[in-house]
Length: 179
Image (cartoon, rainbow, N blue to C red):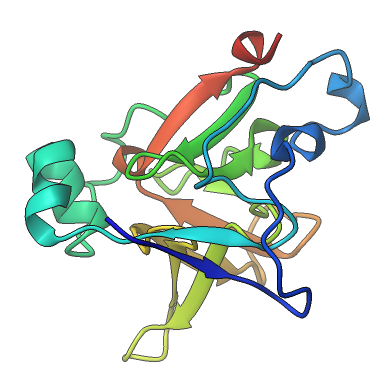
């Protein structure tokens, strides 16, 4: 397996502990644990390159279908749709941090909804139909779901966005594991 570093204008990768920025001030009591080099910091990511066979070996068939083949769970069936624990949501494929639990909200759409991801954690690309924007893990390219601009819906978010994410694309890590 090879690692490719994606860097912004600062051309050297930073491997300091990224968990310090995961929690806002109300969660400042958490002490971060060391993380792997596939973690994110300030928009820099160590790209996780695996072959299709390697992905099949580490993902369940359902995870492979969603993360690698861009499938979609049936609405209301995912374990995180109505789950509101305190912690961080990671990519189920590579373990990279994607969302703070403080950005999750109940949209009523049948999938976990977040109003923003961690900086540099999520890539966006317009769907061919032009109606939606796909969101993928910046570290491994795994399909997460879609992001929508929230216009005229019954709720407002700080970013005016709703990230509709497949539960199976996520792995929740409770805040207690950061103590």
